[in-house]
Length: 107
Image 1 (cartoon, rainbow, N blue to C red):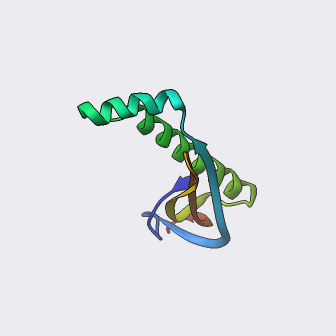
Image 2 (image 1 turned 135 degrees about the horizontal axis):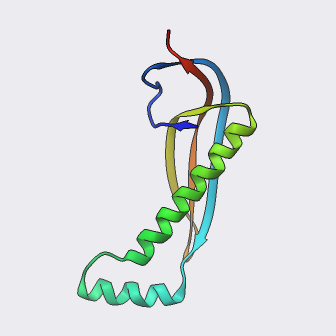
């Protein structure tokens, strides 16, 4: 499955547009990680716990989007975009969406 933020894929042509696909996850922060984050905020440095949490959330959202695209018969997703929104205090949604397409090698 090819996933790209562009509307074209080099060396391929889009032969059919399947439709919009999406994947999302909602994650809540952990109180233990919040304590570490506060300490790092005081002393400086990357908050690795949150970096890892967000990376896992993005990966899970992409996996869910590509699974939806495959179920619809697509072999690529173009024009992929990410969105983040706060659902409630200490919880955020990561949403990824794009256009599922069928591609074949260009002639």
